[in-house]
Image (cartoon, rainbow, N blue to C red; front, side):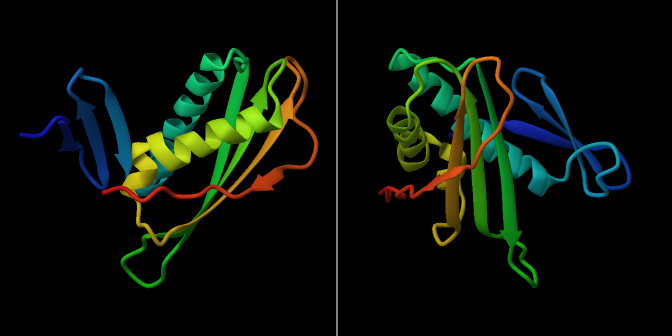
Length: 155
């Protein structure tokens, strides 16, 4: 028996509406006219999954973020199937008292242990991560700090 269920309904042309168990809808559009493509939704899911973890972990270590943005870029295999060969996540995090050590640990825990979307992707996908920390209320600025995240092998 499954522990997660969604439904996808065709809405004409290449448009589909995903509906989760609580009735929340997501528009997916293969033509990218009225919604994101399924692959874009997958990238959004990866960014959101990791962002949720990072926000939660920073709260637990008593350095909550006041704002967080993640920009993702992906490279895809050619020809078909067009799976991701590489993804870059760039985190911009705002808040007081957020140190590079705490943020790197939060991102490492997310990617290495908690983010189920990441662990669903191909194990040979290359991953690059970088971050910038900003004071609360400041504009995003400065160079990104790249760092390595180790993928934890799961059984």
